[in-house]
Image 1 (cartoon, rainbow, N blue to C red):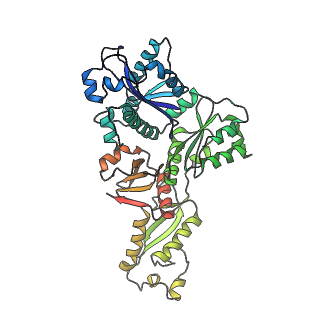
Image 2 (cartoon, helix red, strand yellow):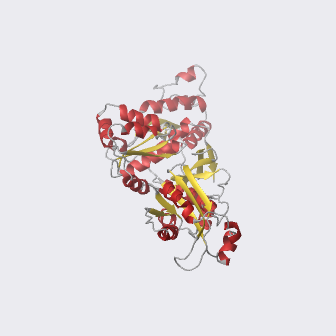
Image 3 (cartoon, helix red, strand yellow):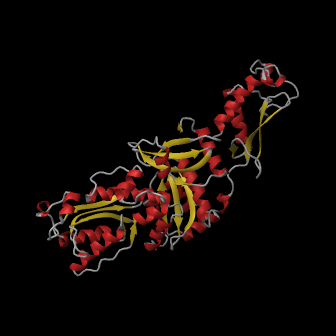
Length: 453
């Protein structure tokens, strides 16, 4: 659990500042579950430059509560939380100073979004909150007011969690607050999980991830893990201390994240899923009569298939659909083994490519159209899919035919600038698994939006 905060102060000498406004959003990694926002009477003068910057003046604070009147609420809302702030050293110091004036030792773990951003989003021209969120397409309102800046920090932190593919932030959070229940822990864990699409992470007591999976319904899938009697499930049930998750909205994003993070984190109970997830591919060659032939074959380490399939039957099903959609020849795509014409020619459903009747150029145009549709080689394209919220969409970036990574953007923010798009993308590895995942998903979901650059 995180307490994301922003503090406005009077300005002045070091450790003599007073708080004029505070905003705290309690964030569970997915949504805000509690909040506290208040003006505060600092009982001292506000520096003129601060008044100009924030718009907060002494008359506004005359009837505001003093710090000691809100101190208990601050302690409660930040209890068992990691403090998160942009330039956390400043905000944490101010809080500790105010509490020390009351004779109370206030201690919390803290995270700084400036430092996290420099590590996870390198190369930005500025890491000030205003300039950083603008460059990342994060909407911000009421700049230099505690609530507006804290809300922007929540959105920034959400993006940083997305970009932390090694899950160091989440693992450290779990290790700070392990749940040490006995058997009823499974019921308690399930009760806290949502019925949404996403990736889930099963942790043991020290925060280490022992299993990563994806599901369209995370709660149901974890329930299956906890009720199964398979050897792997029994190990999982014995070791689990907590389950965290990452909402994706999109099944494609969940599939890509699962594949990437299993390879990066190497959980001890994911060994089977580290293997390549496809066995067969679509290949082409030109025969002696200049017709392009297609065939489904086993993929090996050196071959470069047009697209891939989980098994031979899946490849044959694809070819059967292509036969009708592109008016291809059964014989030339390997669905009808014959020395003469194909069966479709006998029933007048084939143009006669199998007998050399149809001109090769005419037939090959249809084959090339299928190949073009089935591959994203040399393309610059963004796949737009569902987001985690109603006003959000996911973006999967393919540049020069290479999968670059994925990210999320607000619907109010147009992503027609490739440079800005690349800044919100979490870089991911391009490999045969990612190609297979994307291509097979596009075959099943023909209506997915594609932006060509």
